[in-house]
Length: 155
Length: 302
Image: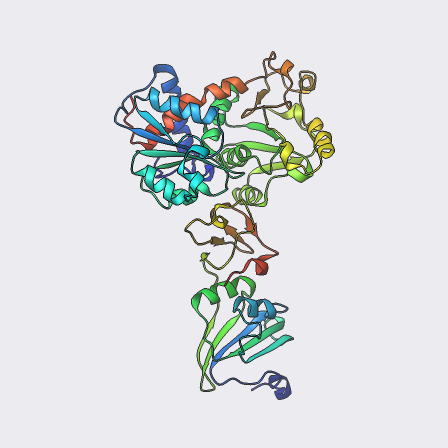
């Protein structure tokens, strides 16, 4: 139980869905973009931004009602929110809790920014990126994406 | 060498490189043979003179033969066929494919669709590993491959020969100096790999500060089409042109190389100096590619 219940209540509990906690501060809207949530689909979403965190100092938090994340989505989340935890909630109870882990490769979830890369030219392949410590690298053309990674997300 | 495909110079170990160069030296001395049953597919989606002709020559000198897609205009590519489909078809006709393509990553993609070896003969601004093997052969003949200070000058951003050479040189005891305009510095991916291998690397905007130290100067063309403004191109290109007078500040045994074609970055008066090695470098393409094909096709050569 938190020492400050009012702070906890800023973001309401969900019945069924996913709570993504410990998102790097300022990345919540990118997380929503990865999940393809822009409000037009009618999803019930709660967002906390720059809230205090013992572990991160400041963090973002996203709660999505009625939606459990796929592994692809979790893989991409790990690229912009490496400390995030994923809590699957059913009937108000957390039934699964896991930290994201950075995969070695991600496929089909990012587009290469190099317009001359073969993966962008209609060939029958998915984009594929090697995950580095602080960036990702296209396995076809070697282009490294670091700062503008959220803009390249395709999910 | 035990690779199914040759896509990038990053694949090559010192042992791989020395194996190919030693074999190339033997082919240069004694000629080849032993591949009479082998057929090599030449898929050149971009114009090429030296690379294509030297692969064609190398295969024929090994006793084998080649089939050539011809120009893009006369092929099914013109009808919109994907690269993946083209290589799958040609792989059914041949024992190995040499691929030149204007897009980065083309050889990597091709390798995912076929069982025969793919040899990357240049993919856009990406890699050109067979050029690197003949570059290393030439460097070894003229300056050795260890305790070497090499300057690489010109378009380092889009120069695929540079990207491959830089990667391969990390297998040896070398100090690499990169000389270019700010706008044409090495791309991030190449710098990342050099950093990861702990290579000794320095970057410069002017040749004069490093020229006296160099054992090898590798010059590449600054490509006019990379500059939106013609005046900007002229200003930059002029700073990276060498002539015989420039080389008076160099060591007597400096080796000057260029993957060719040159435009005006090396003046004709350099050709008459003992530094000029670029034509020898081009000639070395045949024995080196013979050695590479021999290794990738199963070492049937004599």
